[in-house]
Length: 332
Ligand SMILES: [Zn+2]
Image (cartoon, rainbow, N blue to C red):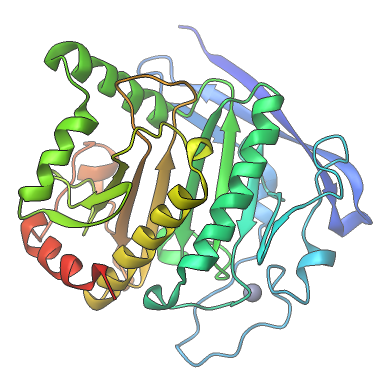
């Protein structure tokens, strides 16, 4: 049996140690049977955790992502990565993850607000966050990390340890396993059908699962959702990567995310996960796409044996039913 592993090393200027350069090792293990990947960073056990303490709980004065603390309490990139140590665009700031799971794993704080309900995120905040993310990914591409994954865990039920809204960005040379599986599926569909899945998906604009569209990005509830109230957005104008989006493209994407979140809020959703999938080359079979799913608000998890070990999903609402509500809230 071949027990394969390799390591990645994140370079960080650590705020807990006078911004001295430190290294964190991430051990990446490959399952000998299935090829599934485990990323281990023992330092992550030390992460501070912010709990939700009721709706009216005061904002903790020591939140490292709040404007008064962000400069002194978040890490900086080494100067040869990013001049000045952090990437800034309007309200958005990007810095290295203090507890990384990959060598190029950063955090993007895109709002000054510590706590924002899903119906109150603005298009402008997302635009600044996405533009700053593109700056980070461009830096990474220059270092050979051409695969660019943007993820968002909003609130602890979605996996966030800090309540203050923030994206996480992972750039890599080979793509995460889930990215590679998506790319393979897209290429297979294209070979089998002779058309791109994403051009076929435009037909959903006439279905009960249609949610809305902001010029270059269309949003639908997928036929077979991967989670509760899942929504899928994709480029209808041929963008392959978040790096391909111009000013208007970033605005369309941001407007769509804000529109979907308003509808999810109406459905009672408080916590979400989001991922933006990009492909680094211009391939006919791929389009930039985004997935957003609701996560539970109570103490019961929505990831049980079926999801974790069966790789299938149990759901209680049809995509046609919730798309109707999301559609009505997509435009303000
Ligand atoms: Zn905060």
